Length: 269
Image (tube, rainbow, N blue to C red; front, top):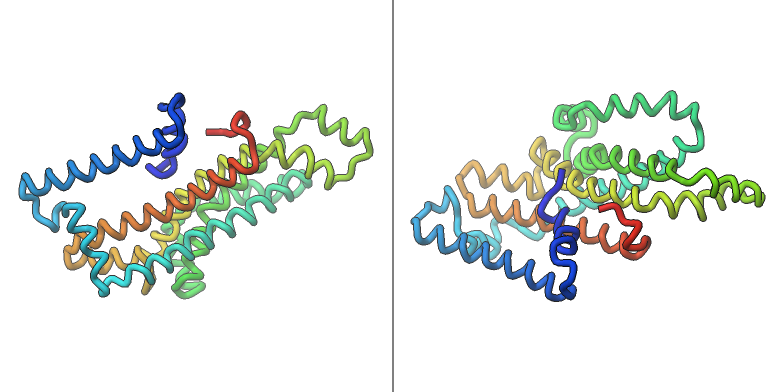
């Protein structure tokens, strides 16, 4: 499962490996600009009505209208996306640490977590609203529920992929459990952790929007429902673009952290 933002950097580096970084990004920007120009020209040439497919210029024009409260609604959705993602990341990593240190805990709780993860989150949305009312908090919880499991699974796998010889060496040198984790298991699990974090970026955006669709009085998802009723398609497109931008921003932050903490050869694309 991926999005244009989720495959942007890997695709660029894979298809244009011999070009300098600035030329790769210039090519990416040029392709996007060309697509927008073609879109604008096609709408004008064929006289497509605005409520069916607005031109990019019509979409951008909605930013000038204060009635949409773009900044406030984008801020609410950003809090839900980043808040739920951060919660899923922290608890996912902590959960993985607990499971690898206790086989009994894994036997008792892990199958239950797998079962709970199979429950459709959209179906759980109304129940979360009943239990916690509606607003930013429940939407963060829905986002967390989507992000948690991919991060948990990939981190567990990464921690379990440590070479037994290295673990035996540290134990033979009387290394503590913390040293074993800090110097052996954690560095080796980072490629897997970041792989799960990339998947979770897409799910974080989906979770926030689903929560706003179900019951909310603010946010970009809520705004989409409102303007859709009046066939304000340019505003719907702008909301979608802003939501996409939040996802791309989150994915970009994950890529930046990945490049800071692990080497190129160890990354899982």
